Length: 101
Image (cartoon, rainbow, N blue to C red; front, side):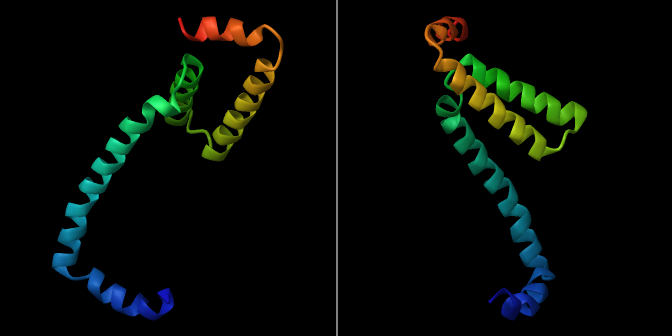
């Protein structure tokens, strides 16, 4: 289907009003994504460990420009390690007191 409409899409994309409409739609989409992010933040960042992981990830991505896939894999390893650590008796209560402070 995409190959069938590609020639028409290329012609429509060159029209002045289409470019103006897309320039107006882009900020609206960014705003909608920002509102969704703000609403999901309490559920995505339930404790201090998650917040610290987010801040560290953003810093690493901005400062050192590490590949995103590597950061995702490191996050998965951290999540698995944290989950395994919670299975140790007494570790859950200790981490809960540390991360809630």
